[in-house]
Length: 377
Ligand SMILES: C[S@@+](CC[C@H](N)C(=O)[O-])C[C@H]1O[C@@H](n2cnc3c(N)ncnc32)[C@H](O)[C@@H]1O
Picture 1 (cartoon, helix red, strand yellow):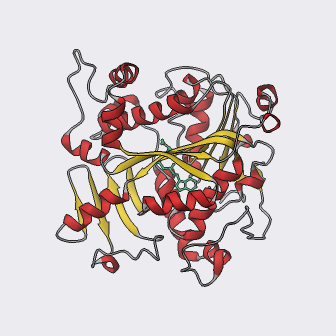
Picture 2: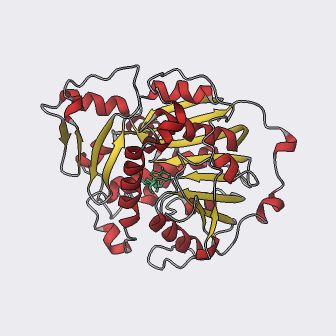
């Protein structure tokens, strides 16, 4: 039998809820969370990712965006190496197929919780964690215990679901935060979840589309669509004026297609709104960098140059001359990385002993161990 975590029916927003600055929701938070079209879009995103099956190593290497995937892995690895410390408890929101498990293992973390809305991805993550995903697995076992959950991170009250596991030292949300920006309530729930689960002084790292770049490209385009050989973005007619009201910075939807990776609705996240909303939840910006600047900055450091060589995004500097195409490099420009810090000092009593944490997760995860938030959909 599946273990399920049923949330209470109350849609209270009291996660130390600050005042709303963007008053465009007449029904209030509860109405927004229940909105049918919001749920349908969340489902579309989940179905898209669930349907993406694991690739063999050969299929992966043949991908038209293989170097972009390697570059993105390098960016995530650098972020993890910069901010993770041995023994850390990690919350990976929208963890996907567990593509970052090896990175966390290298950082010697103490405990890992991964949550994703796509049950197909969580199942792949489970087999990868267990070492059963033969063609993917470069190592057999991970050294940290883990717990995997399936659910909507931008709707569920994760503070309740994970009350016993908190606080976490690091929360990571890679290439997914923009799926929370369909409504103000979801964006708030996402940030409230992160804030409630991080310890004071804890770190929130992530990557997401760079709204400035996307809007600039939209305005340069003749119509409402633009792209190149590996991606396209298309806005609906409602945005034909290419103007966006600052009083309504949520729900700015576009369709994103990236060859061999993404084909679903996404939402613009104006970064200044993200920053100020995060501050309302005690999360202060440490840095934000477009991927191009990120590469230029961290490719000055020998250890990250070596990591780039090993991952092979730019070739290995020897026999392998293959590298990112200009079209892939343009896609990299569509993204940014951010680091936020939870206000406050790391207090002794907040930190659980690593041994206690080890008891919470498992070293081998069965299908029955997967926790379905709100039951299996
Ligand atoms: C581009 S993938 C990134 C996966 C992973 N973070 C990585 O970097 O490899 C985006 C992920 O976000 C997940 N996602 C989208 N909306 C979500 C939601 N509301 N709650 C949880 N996961 C979500 C998708 O299922 C998908 O696995």
